[in-house]
Amino acid sequence: MTRPSRAPRVRTCLAVLTASAAVLLSAPGPAAAVPAPCRGAALALSWAPGGTAVPGGSAPGSRRTAVVEVRNNGAGECTLRGYPLVRLARGDIAETLFDQVAVAPVTVSLGRGSTARLVLTFVAAQRGGAGGIDPARASITLPGTAAVKELPWHWGPVARPATGTHPGNQVSPVVP
Image (cartoon, rainbow, N blue to C red):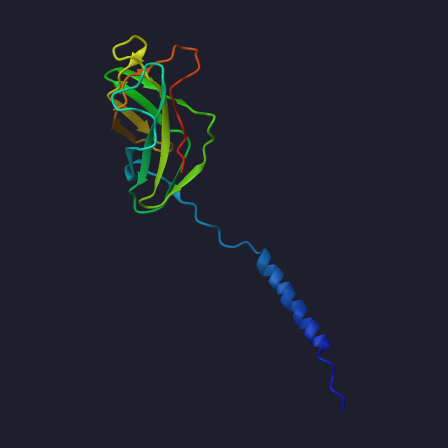
């Protein structure tokens, strides 16, 4: 007695398995959960190393940078994207930094305890000179938040550009 060939059954099983695998591989998986935007209350700011700013000030007309660290002290992961609003102020006199549009914003995910940064670029001024401000503080509102965070300003006087000139005082977007 001859045995029937298994080849047709094997081909049928292979075809069914191939079709099933194709369906499973093409089916969309569960969407990755996107972290919520960061809340101002969960974020802490501090000056970080890495800038060219000098405590007390620099030579008038020199371009300096100061780095701000943003730390997520919240319970979970969150995101930031965009430019913060930064104002350097003493009393009623303030200088608002312009967005540094040469640097494109990216979405930054911050896990619990993680940090990001932003960079303030400014032109140093002569202490007591006209056309400058000697800030006492930097008031920073991070993108997507309403909370204003303040840091004491240690970097000396800052030039205030004349209206209509290229802004020398800028802020980068939040970056990893």
